[in-house]
Image (cartoon, rainbow, N blue to C red; front, side, top):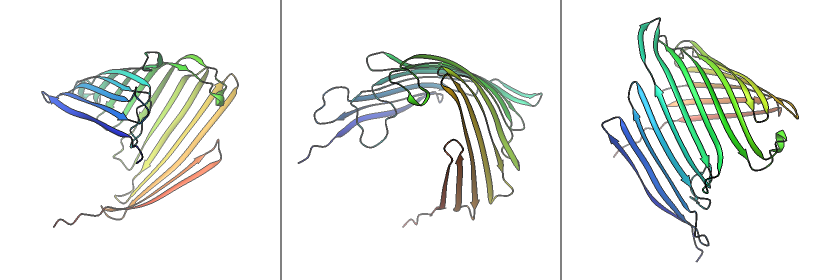
Length: 272
């Protein structure tokens, strides 16, 4: 009889004082022929209320952890992160509903403790009474590249970058709504400038039409690169249970056109 992999463990979710949440899991896979680094665990603690939000996370995945069912984004790693958000409310002042200020820190290392990625971001936004918002984000990162990245001729080594972005979102509940954003800053050993946006058109409760556009301009030591994506998404609701979804996308860099059409019927179960 062939030997099979097994995975076992436990998880839990706890809530205290209605605002303090603690979650976590501990797992282990059992693969024939392997004895070490088959564990995975994660723990999260967070406080959330109308004004403050704070949280901390820890995650670790062994190099030989094999869940068989499911997807492991990154193995042989330990991950630490924390975030703080402050949201003061300013109702009735110049049409502003609230402000948001937040920062996040994330650190990735392999199981032996060698750093792979470090990220630190800061965000600030203004949310208006009419449902629109404007935001500013900046972040700095450290990335240790262990293998050559051939697409941009990047050699193994340490890379430090900083970028900035601004965006504006209109009220999505109106007939026409949209978003526009602009990002600039470092990209590995070069620079990047990106512009993107989308427009949503909802003429009635049957139709919703979304168009999206993004363009990235990369200035690298080995040359300049431009990538452009254009997409169209159309949703038609025959009833509250029957939908037709159509998605079309064009990648200008690859001269590639893709499409997806889905007819969705939500069936109400008959209970005996």
